[in-house]
Amino acid sequence: MKSSQIFIAAVASLAAGCAPSSHILIGTPRPAISPTDVTVYAAPPPQAQQIALLDAHSDSVFGPGGQKSIDKLIDRLKSQAAQLGANGIVLGDVSDRQTGAIGTGVGSSSYSGNSAVGVGVGGSLGIYKKSGKATAIYVPPKDSGGGGA
Image (tube, rainbow, N blue to C red):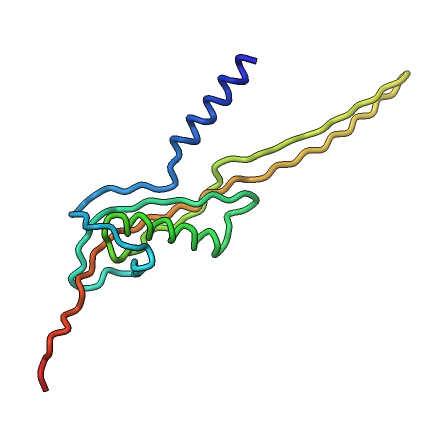
């Protein structure tokens, strides 16, 4: 029983160390905003100020996932950016990779006299991780100054 408790503790500590997101500050953070106020850009607009490099991931079982996994990944990147006061993210690399598998197998054999029969069956499911990187940016509001007519 002691070894099963050690195994459970090891799995729990590994799971705790696998954060779904992280960031590296490269600029000055601002007061937090709502993630719904964060805009996604393919390229930084003029006057954008870099705040942080972001990294997030989304796990899925059975396959790499589709648009739903990408949406979850972008939501995590937007949440990170919002916590730093960034009102935009510039998407970087998005990739898939298999990080593990869960498998099981069953076998049976029978023998009598001079003959033997064996049967086995097995299967496994992949665990995939969709990873994404982005740069959190702050885009100053456009001047609403009256240019005059």
